[in-house]
Image (cartoon, rainbow, N blue to C red; front, side, top):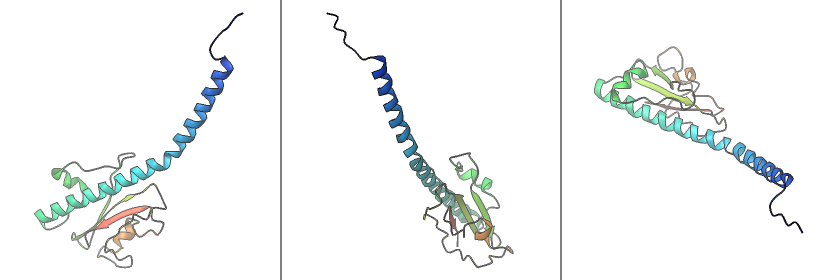
Amino acid sequence: MNNKKGFTLVEMLVVIAIIAILSSIFLVGLGGFRKQAYDTRRISDVQKIQTFLELYYNQNRFYPDNLATLSNLGTLPKDPIGGADYFYSLCFGNQVYVVGATLDQTSSVLKDVGEIDAEADLGTGANCATALRCDDTAGNYYCVSSK
């Protein structure tokens, strides 16, 4: 009598196929978590930039024309996907700023425009929040301002 122990090739292929299907379902499910993690990082980055802007203002009594001026205070964060700069605009001369980021999750309610009045003209001839799309009701932007 020939008694062989082990799995047949068909049994091994079935097990590998089941593992592949389960792992692909699991990896697809992680996509939403990745987007949420990127959005959390963007919000943290915008808050870090806001801290840099306030430090700059305390030293100079005005906000800089661009974010590159802040590089002497520390490394400026970049968007986690693509490494682009975050939105930045000065309003009302150089006394009010708006800084923001585009979020991946369009249903996010994490948007915070501080005291920005979506209807107010802040001295630039155009609304600062509108220029940065921070008054978008879709909620896919996170913005903060000095006002």
